[in-house]
Image (cartoon, rainbow, N blue to C red):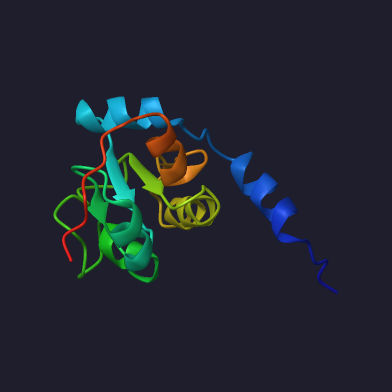
Length: 132
């Protein structure tokens, strides 16, 4: 019989498997071209709060197809399994599970932003209005 766990324990287990990044580190890595920032927030949040300049916007339900370097629907940025993708959701929960899914695809450098877009904005990092 399978043992069930709650979402909090699942997040803790997943996060123990890689190093997450803070807002300033994500900003510097993106700016230096050392990482691709991937915004998986849904449209209403992007419209409400704005966008991170230069971040790829990839809906969560398309993430694996767009970043799989072997996939037929990959983005040009999905150049190989060594791609450092920093996944960003609104508050840093969905991005943890998304990063773990990318790890399963072999993207071993995938990570996520601690506390998500809200931490980015709170740090005073660049945000632009979403065009509607």
